[in-house]
Length: 250
Image 1: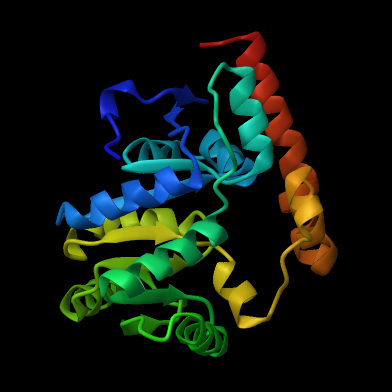
Image 2 (image 1 turned 90 degrees about the vertical axis):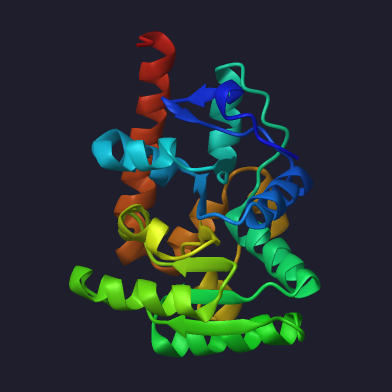
């Protein structure tokens, strides 16, 4: 399913692709088969707040080949602006579909991010769920800018067709902005804390909480001291950003 770059609706100043999960997977497949460097990104409330604060992040998202609504709040907010997003495409769910696609297509994958312990557990779980998956490399997410040429070279030399980046924002967006063209012909996708979930370090919210937009609260409840600013303050800021755009469109 081809995405027409010149007809993508704008949400808070960036493209948003109103696709189902199946349509998104089909687009990912096309991007890999195109044989060029491509980037996928998901939008949630936190990413929208970050775009409002950091102009470079907004420009990075604008340049991405595929942009999905990851958070239920983004689905609802987009509909306020007349963008008929059919469903939420959660990054962690898309990651699972993409790994299944890589297994069936025999596309090699590379994992970048998290701690060595989490990465090891995630890789083992990925191989358990997808026994024929070709994992051609992995590296933890703790590095400096001066390490990036070596990391990018290792990813390129691995022959990976898909790169999953389990690094927090805005580090992962800036890493890919600086290095995407060095990585070779692959699809790069930021997956945030998905490595932690598959590794068993954290858990996902029950389905009912996901459906009613309360997955953030489940995550906050697991680590309130670390997550209170991101979710409590961040969600209020997101609501203000949406209200501001609705009342005073630029």
